[in-house]
Length: 137
Image (cartoon, rainbow, N blue to C red; front, top):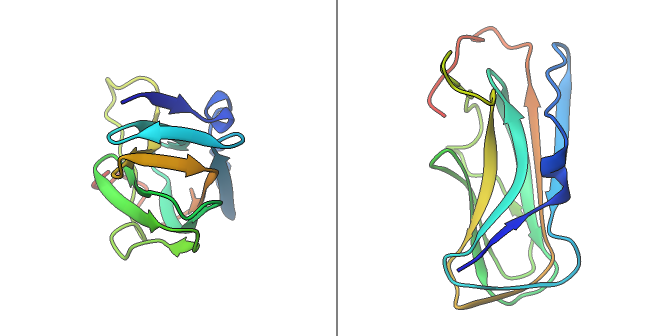
């Protein structure tokens, strides 16, 4: 088991209050991971509402489950791009007042014994929704 941090993790999440914001994270180059490894893809800010997203693989070897605070957004198997699960759409991020930093991390957990290739995740969210009070993430 190991942890991989994508380059998108070095950027602070956008909290612009109008329009849709799309963020993208991917493993750099070809990686080789074992079962139960964790990939930190990107950050989603407090009170963001998830609109949509996808996960794609550059290699058909291995399965990855992509989650945001316990809610599975994608289960990627093989090299086909996977759409977001129904549970992920409409999810509102909620960070308590005592929490720091003020974002949640989209992570991937490897399910297969060996994972190789590039893994890409794209999430679209908005900050200008009516329910800007937080939710279940």
